[in-house]
Length: 133
Image 1: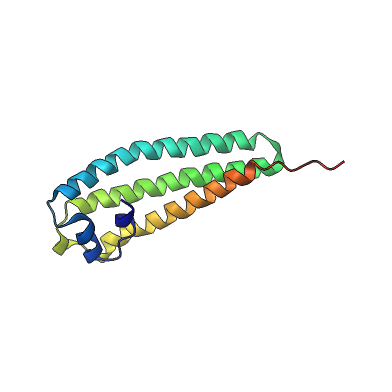
Image 2 (image 1 turned 90 degrees about the horizontal axis):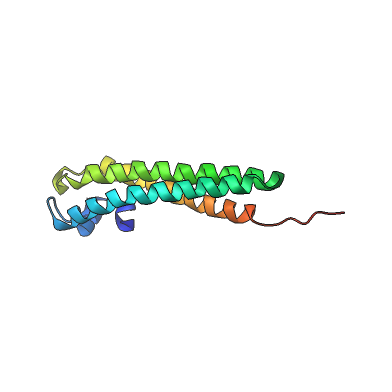
């Protein structure tokens, strides 16, 4: 799945999936549908962890809210990416366009970036800052 998310051209798609129809494409289709459930779980977890962090002090409130927003946004980009992959699966290689590949790559890049930011924000929100007397 990760290789397809960062495919650069039709040759990469061919190496990953082969031409349509193929068993590899059908396996990828199943993986994409399973991924929708995973997206729901991790976006909900990020929102919940962000909400918990937001209840504890000003600094944690800011980072917790930001983490929740970034986690949910990563989920939204993941849904866009999955839909683009599902659209590609029925298209033969000769009809695959650079725009179709970019429709996968761009949201995937955003998703992974936001996922990284989410993790950093959740870690930062868990740091205890000692109160000065």
